[in-house]
Length: 124
Image 1 (spheres, rainbow, N blue to C red):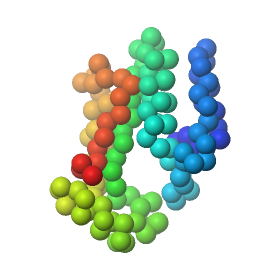
Image 2: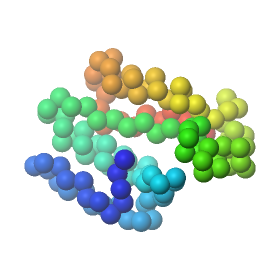
Image 3: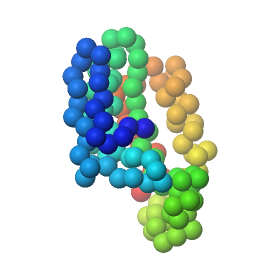
Image 4: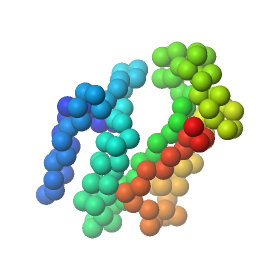
C-alpha cells in the first residue's frame, strides 16, 4: 500500500510525483489512492519492469466485506445498502470473490497481461 506524500523511486527510471492529499483518502488506517493514480503507477511500473519479465497489474475491487469495512461501519450501514442497490448481483463482494482474480494474475495463465487494472466490482 502506498502512502500519500511518498515518492516512489524507480531504479534507473522516472520518479512519479507523490499524490496530493486530495487524491488520497484514508479508510481504517490505510491509505487508498484514486483510480488515475493507481493507473499511472501500474503502467509506469509495467513499462519499467517489463524488460526484466516482471509483470505489474492492479485489482480494483468494488465494496468488499473485510475486517476494515466491518470496523469502519460500512457493513451494516447505509453505504452498504446503497452499494447493494447499485450492484446487479444484489450483494457486495466477499474476499472469496476477489482472491481468484489475484491468483490468476499471479499465475502463468496471465503471462501476457501487464500494466492493466482489472475491475472486480460486480459492475457497480
